[in-house]
Image (tube, rainbow, N blue to C red):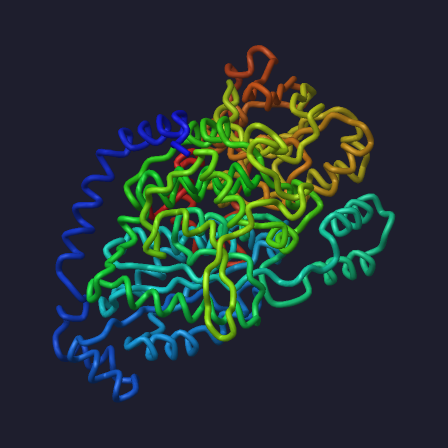
Length: 602
């Protein structure tokens, strides 16, 4: 099927806009690639230090430059369920590389924090900036300059974006992203959300809440809702940085192990020492980013990716804007219903056909660029195949051409919605984004008096006191990257959901973020300019009439004279200390606005 002309036009606009940055970036990357194997430029003393702890046979191969050396960058820790399976990956990768005639070393580790642990806590104020720390830590790991390709081990919210920023910065190196897969299904996500709402209303006690949470998050692997972590995995597949079908295979299974071995083997094949050299810089072109955006819209993915994709693309010399998200959402049908946009979890989604089905369908509909470079060495059509075990041998077979459950997955022609779930919001309050794939149609427009808050705790207290039991637009400001690191505000979802259940029209407006797991509450987030930068959101007062209009992408204050008010910023000094926040002062002062990715390092 020929590419949809609208998608072609969007890609051309991105390409032309990016040309002043993309062309110099590629020139730098290709010049570095032409220098050959990295370690060939090291002095003898440099090399001796790099190889000192390696087995003798590996040392001789490395000195002679006979075989590729793979750098492993790992986000392993055993507090994150999604990253705990990575514990044994380095040994497995080294064995697979050796079998393929190569060597592998752990180049370095990167931090990986869990937003589920820090949600609603002060530690969440470091969450977004951890993306930049991960990119910097990966830069340190790869600065040893001894690797011919890299394997990036990471899954969750900020980890994959940080690794992609670094992989693009070292774009002259080939690289493959290696996931660990989702945990098996536990307590259904909708039941978990119900217990959270009942706890917010005081109908169940903390012991019942804890039991529900533990039944939901119960073992190794990614959380099973379709939040930022699983949106990341989708993205890596749509953009050709995973092996086909790698995303949603459960940890600790023979197929998962075979896919990890295959990634190690493939990393040896795509180096400059072979005939299939595939540097990351050539994969991450404008078409790849457009494919990623289509995947985000078709699956109803996380709003966090609006920030991350902009920052990630800039590291590769591609300049995305919020308008690109809006335009691609306008031509991409919503093909999936996965919690919070439906009742299914990612295991159900995978069983229904998953990413191979979606990619195949979107290619057939002309809604993806097929002619892209990928780590698989083929165009994107390879990602319509799914991996299987034929005895002990890993093979790829054509993926399902029909949905196994049309309550979860549908064709583009019979989609759940004709457009994607993300919308740009623009008006006198600034620029923001909203996700409406799970929002009831009668809540796509909310006009109500504002209630102003400066902290999540204050919102919760007002809810418990009955002060929000009416039509209201909750404005939670001074949550932007410069104010306090732009934390997620998912802890507000149970309280706001209760207000919706009581029949009130409620929306949230904030310069902060919402979790990828948030869905049913109409929310205009990432509002820029943020309050601390003097955005109009800083001048709002209780009772001002606001209009949230997702149908037309409008976000406005209807009360006259607001722009003439004087801003008096609250005391934010508490944001500067405790739980390590002191260490991130330079990040807060240097952070860019949300509409450019809220980044520090790009």
